[in-house]
Image (tube, rainbow, N blue to C red):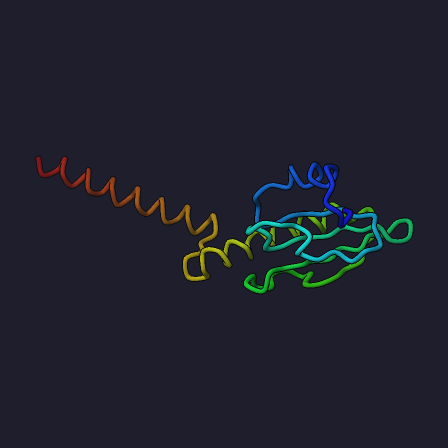
Length: 136
């Protein structure tokens, strides 16, 4: 993306959204920095840049408040047939890292932990209903 503030740049940034994790594709030789994207939700940005034919450079830029999670912490070069798989894995790891950073590690629970908590609550409610019907 160019550095000057033009209508074209505004249109490029319009659909980025308010998400914690972003993927930026760039053909430019300029190095990307987090300050290029304005907003309070820029915790992790994964930059995809083509190298010589058949290879891509994936760079992770993260806010200092976000813990390091996943196998890629800085820069990795991958072949073109593996880019989609590696970026997907990086996005999942980055999403978990941002949830931990925003909620705090002690308040973060995975989908499985949250589901177990809800099942236990349902069982406790069901047991209370059973006790009341037996007493009546």
